Length: 441
Image 1 (spheres, rainbow, N blue to C red):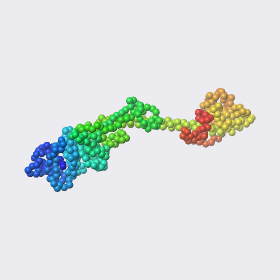
Image 2: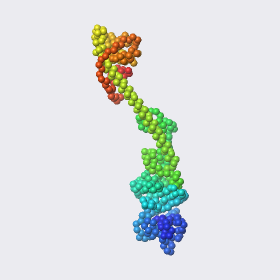
Image 3: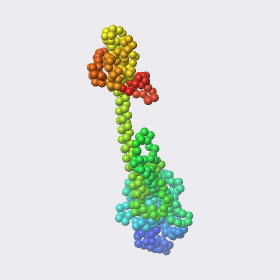
Image 4: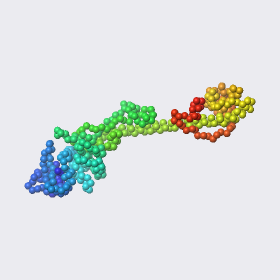
């Protein structure tokens, strides 16, 4: 059962058209007294014209004569459902003002279109393929690629309920109503349903990585829309939309369960998807900048903490290094050995207090920034510094005329600040510094 044959005088004929596509009548080859010179374009076997009615269809087709060899054209045309669908596709393409030919093959025979629809100006060709038999995803993708390489658009049509390749190529599923109504496109077309927060400047419906990273500033809405299937529509309307170029095959770019699948969509839905994708890109850029700022702030805080710990460590080293020289200095000056505290004290500006006869006599390396609050308490005491630079810092904050002595002592080599620990794990040095208030200097 095929629609196209070769007449010995007229050339290619299409029996679905009343004029056979060449200006001749069907009656001239239908049950003539002398067999018409009709042969198959594929196998050259003799054909004859058949007329049947099927439901609402008035069918004209060509049938191979008896004992015909195996023929690709006859195999492709087998099945009434396949036959009727090709008739419908050609009819709807012609109704849209396009020409439609059956069984059009590539010059190199790399593809053969069930129905080749061509625009009036010849600028577009669309292969309308009735794929009723099972086919693998690999094969149908390869056939689609061959069409694309030849500059031919393609849409695959099937009535199979289970279609594993429907997402992989530009295709739709059709259904023929039992009541004889119009064939319907039931799957393969999609629409984009947009959804935005009422205030697009502050997204309230997301659970994104930015929120999980602790960014608590308002972020713009990235859109919460998605793709969904369209309601069934008449096949004629769909084919007309293809011809008018108002629907196009598109690989969906949004949606965890739809991304990358082929669907037929209109320009409006493409624009709605694009708007949401751009919003997501803008939000991602904002999040990247905010995370970068947060990272820099965190690194700065860590740097300040490292410097602070290094300053504390240096202070403790100076105080420890000066302890012996201070004891000797005070002994020679006061005439008795002093008592030196084990560590610095907040009451003495984090300096180490030195006692003579139980009374405060001197302070080793007080912290200059803490001296003003204790100026009156420290004024009667002798202050010690490990360098002229430190003496200058203390003198700038101490009471006028405050006595400050500089003692030199070998200091240990500078040590790197201790490594940062997790917030709930402190070093002994950090714990001691916290108890003594050194972390607030």
